[in-house]
Length: 306
Length: 261
Image (tube, rainbow over all chains, first blue to last red; front, side, top):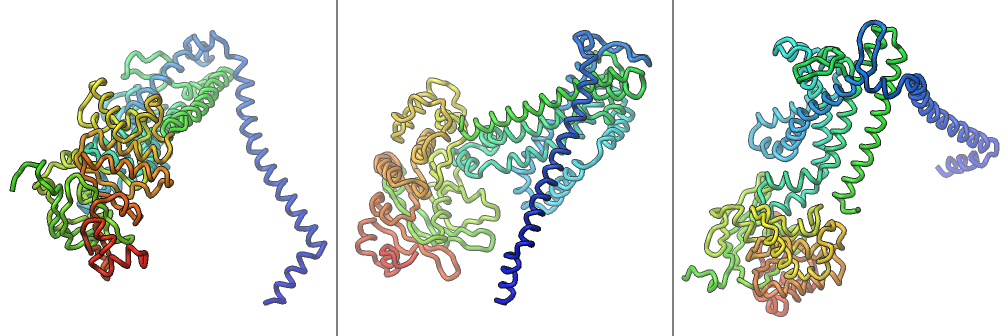
């Protein structure tokens, strides 16, 4: 044993070997740096290209006039901005209560219920697995589901409502999972403190647990907003593609992402597709910055480090 | 006997109490009477069921799955099982081992209990909050910063805030689970002084690891130990002065003189 150790030490002391080790070190360092730079460069290049192409067509007129349709892709993008906003608000309004409610059930109630009955335990486990699987399902599958159920079977047609319901199904797993994780980080001592004051479980959840979990829940919701803004395929088969402004939730419409797709694939106005894409990218970047600021603010408030 | 609570010398009467978690028996055959308006300390080595015993008084053990109780605890002559759980917890406040203020403002923490029970009037809430904070000897330190987060307070202040929060729902009993174990000596002393103040109006049961604290702060002492089957049981109960100077049992003497535990 000792001789082995000595030989290792002596080998390490060997100068040529030391040089090689150093060379490998430097090589590895450069390699890792290159990977990092390449990854960042790719993103910067894509964004830069889209913005440089797109910003040329963007002006107040492009933003405020409605698309005129046709193969030449006349007009601006005003209605698609408004439609995207409608779509986001409606989808979040549907998905948030369902998702947060499901997470509250899974974290606060399912444990007790599972111990009471084997059937409930099985159902809860199935629900958890279901959420996991749904999170990985491609969005077009949700689109086909939405088309079959909402558009055709329930006869809601291509409409904001069909699109929002399908979109809600798409983002539910995200909202449930982020909310669940946020609820699990709430210390048990908060719950005990509240219950020991004679507060009911319901009161405890609404007044201590949910407010404490709020930063995590909000992060999940904002991530989902980004998803809704970016998704195309699912809304192609549920929202339709009308470039008119939807007058009610039963009307068809066209979100920004859908507008990019349609301009690029069905018209000659590739520059306008780039313009719309630029607005889309800027929206997503602003949204991500907002997540950071909001979640930091909320966390500061919850942890008392204001 | 008289039903008049004021003349009742005993707040709680514990008879043959046994608490099990599933198959595990945590506490067995406990018989005890807790004096009104006095401090009763519960001492004993780790794992002897002290906290389990304490949590039986506000039925906090009910939160734990598979828990089962035998025997009976009567509060002012009424069995706890027959009381409404909300009424019980309103009258039996609890202070935890680690200060656990909610991530809310100081005011909202103290007002939490009264609000949970439906009080909305701001002047009344302000009155309750001030009174409770004064009782917990915290008012002077926080009266100008009521809107600040409770989590910005020091550990000792947080624990006194938790006491104020418990007092705000006007209990007649305070359960304290090692309330000073996470605090520095000066903060600990403040809590002990506070306990002496509060015992005039409240019945206090305190679990402690700290022998000196039990000797200093309590009127009665219950010493618990663990059996071979790891079930906790009551070894000795009596006036603190007696238990600490003339323990009846050898085991008690060994424990308080630091020979085990």
